[in-house]
Image 1 (cartoon, one colour):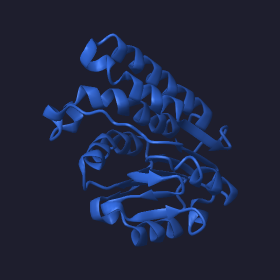
Image 2 (image 1 turned 90 degrees about the vertical axis):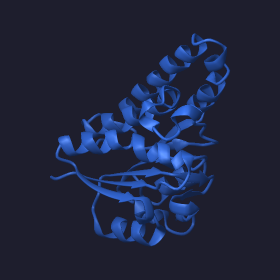
Image 3 (image 1 turned 180 degrees about the vertical axis):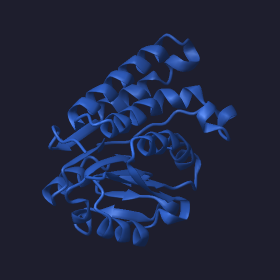
Image 4 (image 1 turned 135 degrees about the vertical axis):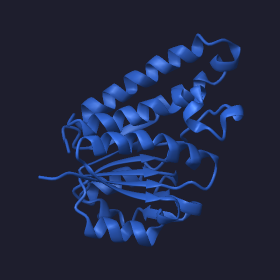
Amino acid sequence: MSVSMIITRPDHDDVTHYLHSWSEQIISEAESKNVKVVDLEKNRAIRREVENVLEKIPAQIVIFNGHGSDSSIADHNFEVLIKSGENESLLKSKIVYAISCSSGKILGPKSIDAGAISFTGYDDIFFLARDPIKISRPLEDGLAELFLKHSNVFVISLIKGNSVSDSFEKSKFIMKENFTKLLAGGDSKSSVARYLWWNYKHFVSHGNLNATI
């Protein structure tokens, strides 16, 4: 059976610019494993387009990059894509990962109730520290890497055939490692370590954690 992945990549502010750039590694890895990638990039990351693709393409994995709330995920220009009580049923039979603030709190469990296989994300604010000197070159930003590496590790682990649970634990291990690096990095880095630890505490996974794509 062929495997398909849908990924949204808005690019309208600093945070989404970083997520857009760092997701390139995920796409490259997926394509190297013969995973068909539907890349909803920039102004394609809108509700109409996302709903249409979710309805028509039987993707096994869906990745959302963007902003969020307890009950929603928003992408291009903050347009809400998925909202609890409205269209979370579109995630039925899918392994979902959302890099967005708080969407793992209510939307995550509601998506499972609506038939999603699993939903991994964050049940509170997701912090992304950045080096202002590297703002135009996100992939060269070593500080941001400490906050984003675990995210790519999670998705790439899934692409390689590991379970949600194994991928989640690999990702959390990376977060712990990077937390230690920040603490040892002097005052300028140790001062932001608490934000990475916050992300670690609020990184959650719901549903069938034994599932694979």
